[in-house]
Length: 193
Image 1 (cartoon, rainbow, N blue to C red):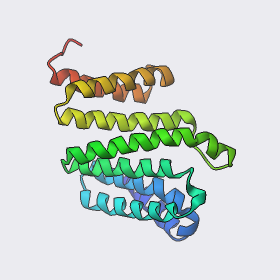
Image 2 (image 1 turned 180 degrees about the vertical axis):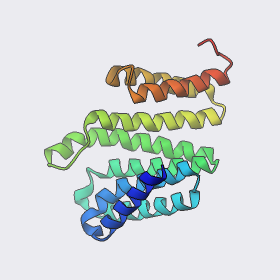
Image 3 (image 1 turned 135 degrees about the horizontal axis):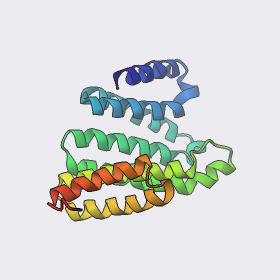
C-alpha cells in the first residue's frame, strides 16, 4: 500500500503544479489518496485530503460547464467522507454519506449520455455501475456494524445479483459481495449457508 500511496502523492504534487488544468484529475487522485490513508489508519491525513477534495469540488461547481460531471465528483467526495466517518465509528454519518454517494453515482449514470454527447470524458457504464455497487457494499458494512442484518443481507443479495449478471461469477465485485454476504451469514449464525 505504501509504495502505491507514494506514487499517488508524487502524481498529485505534479498535478498541483498546474491546478487550473488538472482540477478534475485531482478529484480522483485526492479520493484515492484519502482512501489509502483510511486503510492505513491515518485519519488525520485522510481528513486533510477530504478537505482538499471538498475545496476542489466547490471550485469546480462554480462553473456551469461542469454540471454533467458534478454527480461523479460528488460521488467520490461522499464516498471518501463515508470512509472517514465510518473509520471514526460515526455510523449514522457513514450511512448518510454512502447513501448520498449511491444517489450521486446513479445520477452520474443518468448523465453518461449527456457527457458522451458533449465529448466529455465518461467512464464506461459498467464501471459507473460498479462504483454504485462498491458504495452499496460499504453501506452494507455500515448496516452490519449497526446490527441491521436484514438490510445488510438484502442489499448484498441485490448487489450480488447485479454483479453476477454484469461481471460474471469470477469477478472481483462478485467476490467482494460474497465475502460481505458471508460476514452477514456468520453474524446470524447461518454458517451452513
